[in-house]
Amino acid sequence: MRTDRHRKREVDNMIRISIAGAAVGLFVLAFSDELARAADLPLRITVEAGEHARIDSPVSVSLKELNRLPAKFRLSEIRDGKMVPVPFQLDAGHPPRLWWIMDGKTPAQIRRTYVFEEGPSRAQPAVVIRVHESKKYLEIARGESRLLRYNSAPPPLPSGADPKYTRSGYINPVWTPRGQVVTDRAQNYLHQLGVWLAYVGTQFEGRTPNFWDLLNGKATVQYAGTQHKTSGPVFAAFTVTQHHLDLGLPGQQKVALKETWTVRAWNVGAEQGYWLYDVMSTIRCAGSSPLTVTKHTWGGMAIRGAPEWYNERCRVLTSEGKTRSEANHTRVRWCDLSGSTQGVWSGMTVMSHPQNLRHPEPVRVNETIPYFCFVDSYLGDFQITPTNPLVLRYRFFVHDDAVRAADAERLWRDFAAPPKTAILSID
Image (cartoon, rainbow, N blue to C red):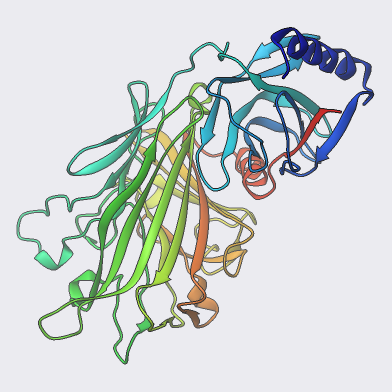
């Protein structure tokens, strides 16, 4: 068994080897982000920036093949010959992953080196980012600053509104670091819900449920339970279930689709005036019947901007440089919706992952109201079957001030092609 003295000697060797730029005494266990079999602590982890510069990038490594995970462990970066403690967080999935932020600026083609070892963490406590759950919603906050609210119970409707508009299972409001609200459940478009996902034209068991237009009474989407939530120095996350309900049968409702949302907010950007959070939607058939999403000009992951964002107080910019008047139904990697509230600009960029269906995805951009959606059905029908669920991933860049295309592009690259990790161990 390795003693603390042996372990210290091994870590010191890692520092000397890193400074010398050699690999003597090291055995490469894995590349990319996977550990090789039968790995033991301590481990040396390298992170490659790749072809692009990085700023405060979330990075992770799989712990799938680690022999054992000790009760206490820590992460440090080898920097200028010193061990610098790094805040980290364990994602206890299958397999578990170790997450941290590769902080500061990392130029292209630069490698950074970390050590993962047994022992109490020496990192100074970061401002923790937390999930709070009440009977009505789940909310993510960093310190005293709120990021977003997911409505697990239907919020009250305006006086006189049709009860068919009763809806849960969406995000609203979303706040910027300065506290500006960038989303809305529009009083004149009560089916537009802040950040939500719904389809318009569908075929299911001979019926045509419309999950978007709540007033037609044919279908709806509702929250169905919280599966998991976690808080920490690197991210806060929760996973919820939503049911897409077919209301076309007399006197009953039928679950057509079961959807999970995993919402993860990263502890980055607050001092620079932005938040980052991800939504991963996994949509499965509830039973043996498939569902077809038919060709339509809107419907999918959608965003409704703040109520003041009309006319010249609203702007759209896409990854292809298109603005509001020319972006409709173009294919994009990301799309930004920004607006001015009492003379102060803020907004939200939504980024499509390369593995998404029909990426780069078409967007529906409205030239009158502050809203857009990713509309894969614009390119034709697609099916969700019992053996073929639909998985969609989006990253949200919530920013104070007007968007800078260079920032949106850099953050999309982090999302689409994150830094590569490799793990080494002493031979």
